[in-house]
Amino acid sequence: MIPFNLPPRTGREDHHVLAAMNSTKISGDGEYGQKCQAWFEQQLGCHKTLLTPSCTQALEMAALLIDIQPGDEVIMPSYTFVSTANAFVLRGATIVFVDIRPDTMNINEELIEAAITSKTKAIVPVHYAGVACNMQVICDIAERLQLFVIEDAAQAVMSTLEGKRLGSFGHLAAFSFHETKNFSSGGEGGLLVINDERFAQRAEIIREKGTNRSQFFRGMVDKYTWVDRGSSYLPSELQAAYLWAQLEQANEITNNRLHSWSTYWQGLSDLAERGFITMPQVPDNCQHNAHMYYILLPNLERRTAVISQLKEQGVQSVFHYIPLHSAPAGQRYARAHGDLAVTNDTSDRLLRLPLWVGMEEVHRDVLRALRTALEAGH
Ligand SMILES: *Cc1c(COP(=O)(O)O)cnc(C)c1O
Image (cartoon, rainbow, N blue to C red; front, side, top):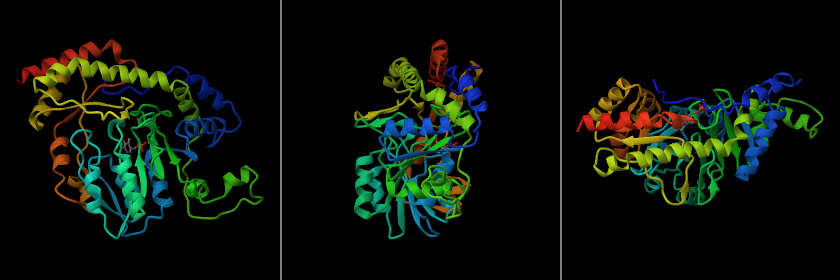
């Protein structure tokens, strides 16, 4: 079976993880942790970054930092992973879903303003497939109405909008290093990006169980004490070492994925022209990171058939997401603004194809199987 995903592996993970194991500090913020954070701070040109055990936890930290209170409203797309919502729900927020754009599957920036009420505290754009949301419009609305912007950039490491890295637009942003993402820290991991420096000091405290341990280690305070609310949001040094091996080859990983993405684009363009599928669209001002290659099929029945025909030919393909507003979780803690027609329609038709570093050897087989599956149903 050609898998849908293989975790990225550069070959240098063994070396760095072993080096971390042999060092005297294997808890969080050791040498590797600091190297990774400095790398991202330089890449993003941001004030501060903090590694976390997952993107979910980076989003949870964001919810704590903007001080979400019960009753606050947070605007986001329904077409996302459940953590985007849960991070805020855990602090008592009500989630308000706004529909997506049919071209990028990203939140429709033109529908946001009408969903804002006196209780709205934040907007959480999700850069689906590593393609940027319209951050100019979203940040303008937020500035004008004094809302926070938290980017869920889980899928968007290395992507840019107008040449500026995703993750550098919001007050805060979160990346994921889960094994299904472009870069992994050994299976699970994440990063909180702090663009608004007002949050920097408290973020360190919240991440260190509510203590001022980070400042203490830097010699900035002479007493290590309990100062605020907090939890444990540090990954171990072993995870950072694994991630470092991947950051050393960040461009190679991204270029390899982009090559696979283009192979799909070229290999499927005639099928798109003949109306069998709809291709993903990338706006001109976006450079994406080839996180995902998806196609849209005419309807749910066709998608189900194509998945099973691909499977018969030894190719694994997957769909996601059940829109949150139509799932039990969303019904407990959220409301929809408008009919979410695009979300309902496209989520039934979207199919994700295998995309992983080093898949060039099997690409032809995947394309052949897909062509067979699509033409079979026509
Ligand atoms: C993967 C993902 C997450 C969660 O990331 P974890 O690191 O697994 O917590 C959150 N949001 C989006 C959009 C994702 O794709």
